[in-house]
Each structure stands twice: as structure tokens, then as C-alpha cells.
Figure 1 (cartoon, rainbow, N blue to C red):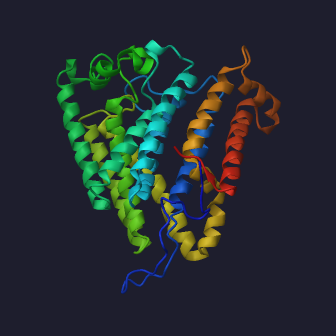
Figure 2: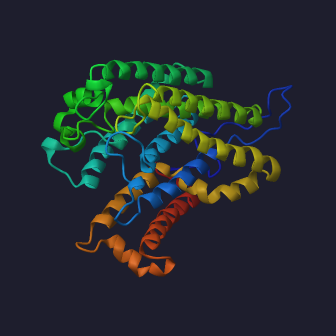
Figure 3: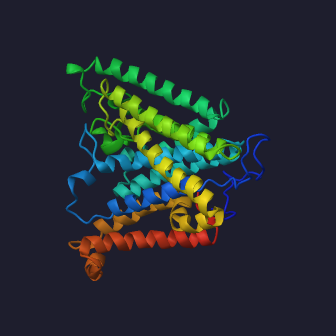
Length: 389
């Protein structure tokens, strides 16, 4: 838990100075609002989607195997925007002590989180993989790779090389399956995660894959790396032209989407294995969200209304975005408790019924849950308290 400057976080705090001579751009704040705005908007959607009282529509359920539903895109969007944030964090020399602490805390918290949200505490089959563990591995990998390159060009190369290598690996593995088709009984996650984690993987391995195992981490790496590339492009705009950065981010977004579409002709895009085609297209979607926020807040509003007015307009979303890790995993825990608890009538249904005047039971609960986390995030942001691993 940290208390910080309300305008600039440590990951983004640099001295404000004029642009290089001859560039012709005035001095501006180093704060890039668009990342927090994009994360805040994403959290609005994600909280509402996690607050649906059963029966849940098909598009808010994960695809059973192949294919992609709307809810399949939510965590990858979070990973893509987290990749942008890692560029902000590791552009400078972040201490290894802080990185090690983040990784260890996330790994331990991830095991506890999986146990609580799944109500499964049996040590012999306790799940060792999960979303927080995936995030921890990504942080370690990105900290190491930022010792190699801290440029947008370098991270674009890393993204593309990782996508090509992953695609070739999937093609090789597919050739070993009947009909060249990946199935729950023939896929790299079963072969790798099953051998390493055994009964400690997703559903004790009975589903034949792990959506947050080592194989999925490889796909998530591609998604996050695409975001990191865009993050470095945005950071370059602090002393250059934000219009130019906007164009470059747009080109990179289209590149990821086009490459992902091309890879999809070879390897089917789906979340269960976080295939390289899915990784690139999900990353492109996250980039599009960041691009829109960057265009509106860090280019148009800052230029036309000034930084102070821009900050006031973005404040509600920034409040959510600045505590995105806390809010994202916190609302999942609370939603699971409210939707499952309460015997025959869940707590969620009781809350929805009590507030049904807001538009019906389902709408009322979703709004109440959203309001809860918005108030929590706003209070923390107002007091400059930010919860991070």
C-alpha cells in the first residue's frame, strides 16, 4: 500500500521539462492519463459482467473449449493494459527488491485467492496456478527483459518474435493430434502443465488444460508485450509529439490485429489455451481501448481544455484505474460470495430485490456492486492510497 502524488505515480513521475530544442513542443506534464482512464472504463464493464444474477447468458460464460465469447476477452484486456503499465514502471530502473516482493506476494496471494474463490482447500489438489500467479510470472519476465531493451522498437520485436515462435510451436503440436486439431485430450497444456502440476492444475487436470498454466502464460506474454510496446510509444510522446505517438500506436494496433488474423488461419483463436492468434487479437483490442483514451484525454482534451480540466473530467475513471489490481480481483471475490452465499436465495438476489426500484433485480444488483467499488476506489484515490503487490 502506498501514498503518492495524486497527479503522477512513481512509475510515471519524471521531471517536467521542455521538448528538445527545435522540436517546437511546449513543456507539458509527464502524467499520461489515458492508461488509468482505459483501465477505469474496462473495470466498469468487467464489474457489471461479473454481477449478473443467474441464469447467465451464453456470451457471459467462457467458451467450453474453442471459440471466443465476450467474457473470454475481459482478463486478456486487463493483461494488455497491464502491459502498457509495465512500460511505465520499467522504463526507469525499478528496484529488484520491489520486483521480487511483488512477485512473491502475487504468487502467495494467488494460491489463497484460487482456494477462496473456488472454495477448495484440500492440500493434495490445491490449485497452484491462477490469474494472480500468471500476472506474477509476467512481472518477473518483463522486469528481466527491460534490462535488455526499454524502447518501443525493441518491444515490438519481442512481441513479433514471441508470436512467431508460439505459432510454430502450436503448428508442430497440432501435427501430432488427430486431424491436426487441438482438443482437451491433445494439446500442449495437457502435456506441459499436466506433467508439471498434475492434480494441482485447473479442475485437478480433469478438463485436460489449464487456462492460466505455463502454456497460457506464453500467450499472455504476447498480449502484454503488445501493450508494453504501445506504452513505450506513449512515453516517447512526453518529449515529442503526441499526435505522432497517436499515429504510431494506431499503426501498431492495426499490425497486431492483422497479424493475429493471419495466424488465425493456422492456429484457431481461443482463450482456453491463449493461442497466439487469440493473444494478438486480444492485445489489439486492448490497444484500441488505450488508443481511444489516449486520443481523447492526452491529445484532444489536454490540447483544447488544458491539463487541469482534463484531469477533472477523467477523475472518476482514473480513480478506478489507479487501483485496478485491487478492484479487479476484489470485485471477483465479492461477486462470488454474494452470488453463491445465502442458501436458496443468494445475497445478490436479496440485494437486487431490495433495490429493484432501480430497474429490476438484476440491474439493481449490478449497479449496487458497481457503486460499491467505485466508492471504494474514489475514497482511496482521494486519500492518495494505492494498493499494489
